Image (cartoon, rainbow, N blue to C red; front, side, top):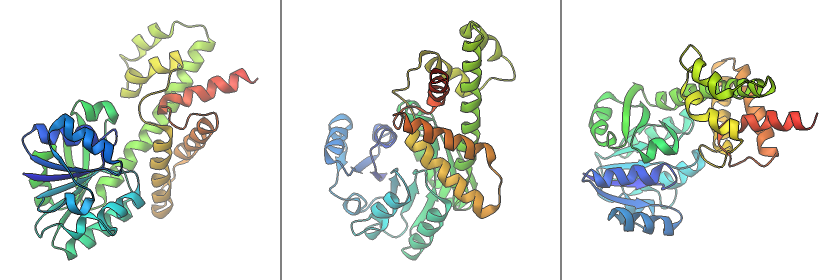
Length: 292
């Protein structure tokens, strides 16, 4: 298929690469053109000077950018992709954004006879690089059926959750759950250190029981070592949590733990951890102990 991919960040870069390696004709756009040229050199696809040019004649346009405003800019801005998308094409957005912007783009796409899916991803940079992302999707069943075989190039699980917006709402659930898990793990590791336990042995045992989680298996070592210069940045997590908290105000959901962990992440930002991995919640506890 002829595809366009807009946004070559730590997630989009390898995702677009998997599409090209799967045999599709991929044209990419990135605001930093050097990154697009690097992608072309690595994967032998093509790059365009604007989202609008990248989307010309594309059967599916994928986007994976920072937030609602970035998404609007690359899709409906002056040089946005929607201006050149052909009737019958599909816009599949992998940005973690609000459900409101998903519904807004669905309406605008419908006016252009273009289909739309909101399809945020989970799995982090490692999941993108290894082609094993989990994708939660909102949109029409028949559109999802068309796109699923294509996105399986970089996904191990892709499921339709419901109508447009449902994908973004499911991603909010994902981030709400992660926030509490990481804080719990950080407190557990901190407690174990203070109790002079062999943390490796403790994790080895409890990870075989009810406390087991992906976060435990993949992030406890970072907490032990106090090394956080990798992974999903605190800035990104706070953006995601703000989306969830805003939605909770709209639907009257109560998220006290999520709000508290969001505040803890703001403290991590304050000690220089804006780009640290989200497991740096443990660094906040270490900092608190050192100042006692």
